[in-house]
Image (cartoon, rainbow, N blue to C red; front, side, top):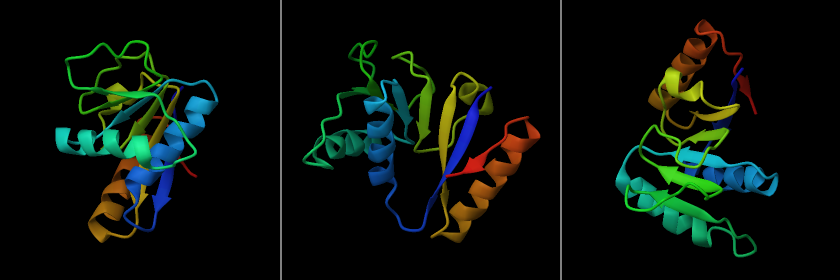
Length: 138
């Protein structure tokens, strides 16, 4: 069954956490899919991933529909599809429950620095439980 982990964000640093999580799983040999809300965010994350840590190299691709991402260990996308056979999903934006069921491990974010985002995270946490998942906080 899919394991859902929430990452608590006390500051607006989601891109940094997306990169850290992607690196952790890449180094462990896992394929990763990162889903973000819109193309501009995907391009920004793609560029940030090249420079976020000078001592790190994260081979990745931006799934913009024009390149084949099948062999990429890390893919950034705005679509709910799995172009690289990833088993780890990092949600920069919430995804459908039916989609997350395709993964062994899913990361969601509890953005507690913003009341509306925190309330939305609590609602997702409850929804995961209601659908049989056992979400936990990292």
